[in-house]
Length: 230
Image 1: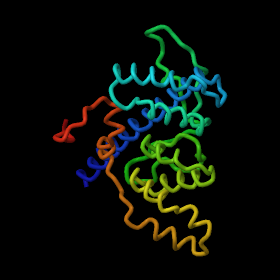
Image 2: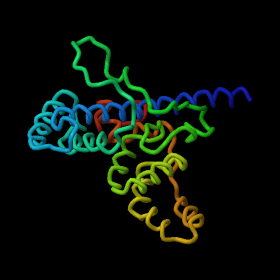
Image 3: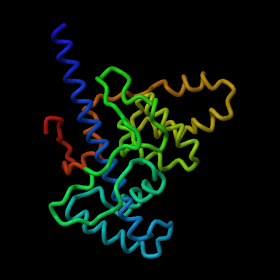
């Protein structure tokens, strides 16, 4: 019994660390997207010189922060901010002197999200709405959600990904299988959902660090012999 209690503490701590890494990466990328939009578009969907700006940004960011900040990656971040404008609450952009408060310290979720012990229902959906930050949605998941054009379909996949703990590959599979469209046409919606959830890949908390996008964000070099202890 003592071992089980201690094991649960450790499992909960690992899950919390994984969620923290994911949430921090998501917030950072949203803020980067906001900076780009405000700089090149002044809040409007106009980007006449956006290509040149992104190319220069990509070159400098890759040089200073490593891979993960290509032109295409920055476009994803810009799109992320535009498609999820209410993801978080943040203060207006202020360019402070070096040593000032980091931008991430001035960011809060749109709703309060509690981290519960591992094994219980994580971050309940009671006060959460699609389009708002959720710790169970990683940057890899958001990248796939950005491919969904219909707002109602995207909201559906957000909810399903959270409720069913879908990995990025599972979410991609469900989007590619047109699950939302098939449900909209199907009379047996419950049966189709049960079928769609078969083969669900439930990952452990430490598996978040195997995600190439997380490795890039943490500046951990990709290597064929990289092991979890490293």
